[in-house]
Image (cartoon, rainbow, N blue to C red; front, side, top):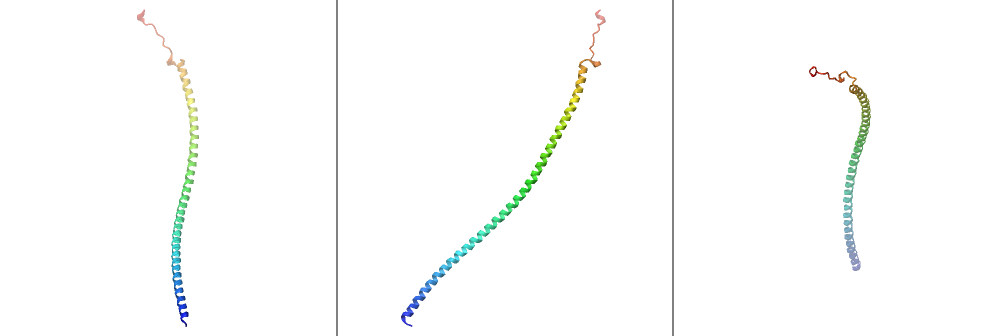
Length: 135
């Protein structure tokens, strides 16, 4: 081999070594980027799983609240119905009571009328009789 060839081969080896170091540095950088991406991805996956778990818990609570809401709505409707029935019964009892009081009051009124008008023996006017000493 000639000196020029050796020199050219040595230059080629240096250039290739330098290029190899550059490629290794690029590879290390890409590897670091890949690790950061994987860490970010696993963090995002964990956050996504946490969000899904939280969503599921909230959804379960929502379903439970909806069931309770429906039960309470049925209870409200039943209580409203019972209240209406009680109000109807109260009105009926008040009417009955008024009729009975009306009959009772008319009976009382009739007996008071009789007493006022002297139809009762105890209510006869008393007459004064002259005393014997006055003569």
